[in-house]
Image (cartoon, rainbow, N blue to C red; front, side):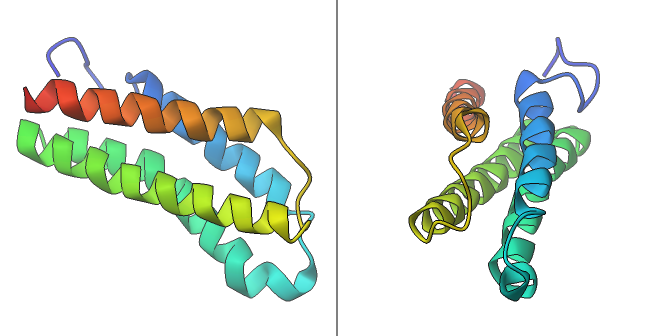
Length: 118
């Protein structure tokens, strides 16, 4: 955490913020019947990723930062699952950018958690 001066510095926070914006844009095209259900859930999960990274960092302790990263990782897994379900239902078109960010964020969070735990 010493080289990071703000919760906005980590690349994973920047990537996850971008992912949230893309998810909001993609879900604008969802069927009206899904707005209250899975669309809202996907949007909450996407916003939860950068939010928990920031919250964990701002608590200023390594254990709290790790906890925030783990919660963000759970939200990423939740969003990935929801994205896959919507794709199977053909509610959403493929988005290589979203799918790439989902995978990249997962890898970066996993690596960062392992590094901070050692």
